Amino acid sequence: MARHGGRGWYGRVVAAALGVTAVAAATSVWTAQAGQSGGGAAAAGASARPSAPKAVRVSEEIAHASDRGAHGVNITIDDGPDPSWTPQVLQVLRDNGVKATFCMVGTQAEAHPDLVRQVVAAGHRLCDHTVSHDTTMDKKSPAYQSQQIVDAERQITKASGGVRPMYYRAPGGAFTPYSRKLAASHGMRPLGWNVDSKDFERPGTAAIVSTVERELANGPTILFHDAGGDRSQTVEALRTVLPWLKQQGYTTGFPVR
Image: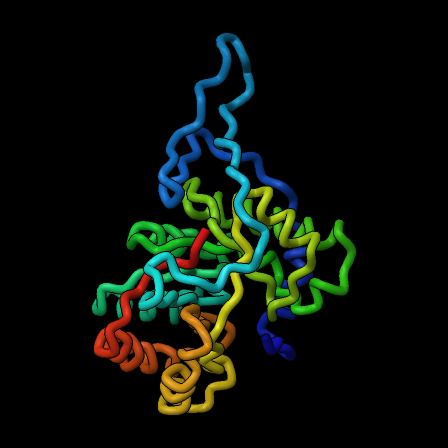
């Protein structure tokens, strides 16, 4: 999987991201996406707030398959949320009756909690895409990897109103055995991709569509972006790709857990 380097947009968030501290889970945290809800009441006389339900460990193997089987595809949207582009992506998904997985950068989720909640309310799933989108994650210490993954999980969960990310996608595919194991222990299945639409390079709407159609034979998980720059080509490409997938007999689902 090719890495996406040189993203100046992320340089502006790194300084703030590295200073992120852990935020205690909110009361009555719920996990609607996983079918779990609520936290237990605090013990009588205890002053501490109820804690979030403990995440159920999932496989640490990188997921690519769809829960809809051989004719399923997974639409995944990375790097947001973004106030300009995420609402437009949500509208195209709504128009086509498609659910997607949004791989969110922690600082973006923290800055735009209203958009995180819109994503959840529309029935989409959340994915942890680290605090600051460092594509050299696999070259960094376990302590740094932990900070990036765990702090982003907390940021996204808080922004969503208590819905946990169900997946973890390493920026640029920079997974390590340690990061995969850590994510899985927090209930987040490591998530890869099979088709890189190359929309981040802005090659033109037609080129993005052509790449998806050509590479879909590689597997069901398709990578798009809703932040990091002008995503107008992505929005237009989705308007074409989503109906085309249905015409080809595919159904959209979520990555396996």
